[in-house]
Image 1 (spheres, rainbow, N blue to C red):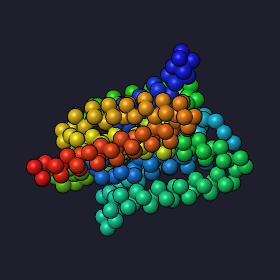
Image 2: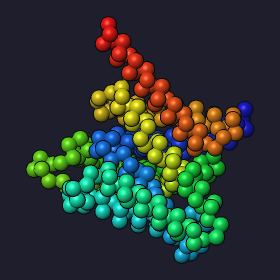
Image 3: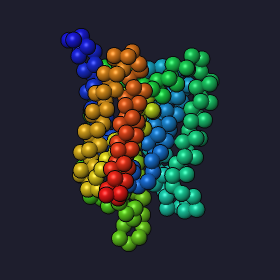
Image 4: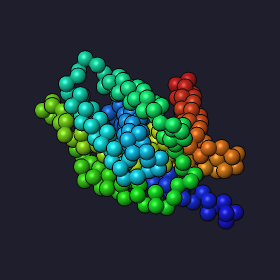
Amino acid sequence: MFEIIHFLFPPLIACLSMILIFGYLGIHILERKIIFIDIAMAQIAAVGSALALILFGFHEETWISYAFAFSCSILASLFFAIAVRRITQIPQEALIGVIYALAAALMLFLLGMETGADTHLENILIGRILWVQWKDIMIIGVVYSAAGIMYYVFRHRFRQLSQSGRERNGEVHWFWDFLFYGMIGLVITFTVPVAGVLLIFSLIVIPATFAALFADQWFRRIVIAWVVGAASILAGLALSFGMDFSAGPSMVSVLVIILVISAGLRSRCKSNKKAG
């Protein structure tokens, strides 16, 4: 038993750290109706990482690869912040989808130029959460803390923009959107090598969706997202260890199952109330 705890403790701490920041971000993302911004940012960061691999041959995470990934995320953040004001003929979610598809194609093109890039592609998709090291946890802990402080300091501004999308004068403040997206890019840049694109998307969207089903008040949604996310992480890691599955897909599966069952039960309860 001690060996099991010793083996699963680092990935558990890493995932719980992720849900703290991602649970909060997910509430904002749902309010803004930009569901795919997280997976698009993750894919864009992966393009930067792939570019560093092609130029310098780095198969491991280095500060140069992080710098390339974050630079791509910052450029994407600037684009999204300005595009919401300039490109009004296309829904923002559709625009994000187009950028995601472009980034995915570009990443595959870049990795296709490098021999033995299959492993790098697999890490980008599913990460290596079971093999996370304490140094990785320290790095993402510092990054998450910096982002969390920033989100807390400007929480009223971000909440106002997420709930209304516009200031009182009717103009979108692109700088605050840029800052919001930029912090998402920063968090995701340092998380992709550890958790992978699939788990990041699931931890951001699914707990927040669950919370939206059962609460209207902002703070309650955040707490529900944290609790559901943490419970799913524990169950997913236990399933992964017990059934010898990959940890990332196991946690994603648990999250989806919980969401589907809960949505079904809520719908049935509503139907019973109407019938009564």
